[in-house]
Length: 301
Length: 211
Image (cartoon, rainbow over all chains, first blue to last red):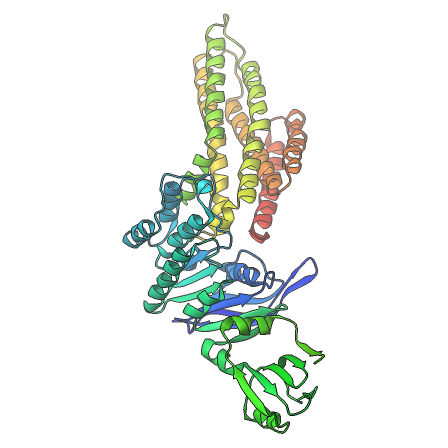
């Protein structure tokens, strides 16, 4: 068995001279739910498409289940469930015909589980795909991807267009799936609360680079945000490295720092703040801090 | 592979129906003309007469089918969907080509059989070249396949004008070759080279493009 189900080495992608992915390195171990985050046009979909062999890379390598992405055989693809962004389904087909096509082409098909999903999502088999709502298309696409009992599930913004109930059902499905042995999920989403709920490892793409790639808990421990009150006006430079964000207003300073450790704490203590409060950060807060440009702003009191 | 071929046939069933109807009409016309003709007709003249409407069908229908397969695929992102399933791009393209060959055979096979039967029934007492119908059928197949390959080659685009005009112009260049070179070995070699070049370029474009 491969230790890493997904491996990306120095992946570079240019679109019309614009660098979208700039030397991405990534390893996703078996059994992991990996949440890939990034702002719009950060390169999440491009990276997933390169991984699945739908898009050629400019440089670098991507491997799925030990096979180079551009050379995935039908046998390897049969072990991967894929839900594309925008849910690329054949629009002029009826649901029943599309399901039959997928079943006939798949290497294994869990009819019982698929029937359960169709019933759960109330999907009409006699309606054309073009007549389905975006949410229903998402549910159908997800059902088709799950019906093959995939070893690796790649989901590109799968909950896009789903209502709250359907999103919750999807998340529970994802959790159920991962509880089965050796299942791995890579998914990108804009809904950070969903990612926070299911992912055990997080990657954040910003400026073409993977600026964060670690376990969710580790990420929360590594990035700290403090509100500091100084006896007099706040110093403009705390001589700390890896400051993500810093805002000063009179005696008050709000600072976000990556890789917080005892040395940084000691350095901060030398400025003798009269009050230092750590501000709790959700994944959404961390995401916003990591993806906006590094800022040091000073506002008048 | 069978599923992919079946899908292609179902999605382009109009071309198959059109081919079958056109073939049936041609056979009925041919047979009735031959049987109602007295004295017995000159078979080569009839064969050439038959070839003209076949060429018209081939020039318009087959490039249109190739274009339709590739153009609708690209614009409806069918291959993008199929690539999410246990299917490789090569399999998708091979299934498509097999479908094209089947469409050509629907036209040519019944015509060849009819031509052979009529020749045997109405063979004149003078000696004629025995491989005439076989030669004509093989050349007709090659030219039909070349036209279809042109459709595949020019159809892989998001522009509507390029595939339509491109296939027609290239086909119009290709067809007069028969008039110049006849049905002999030379034209067969030229057509085979043309088919190989078209298929290699189509395969290369289809394999390397983002889906």
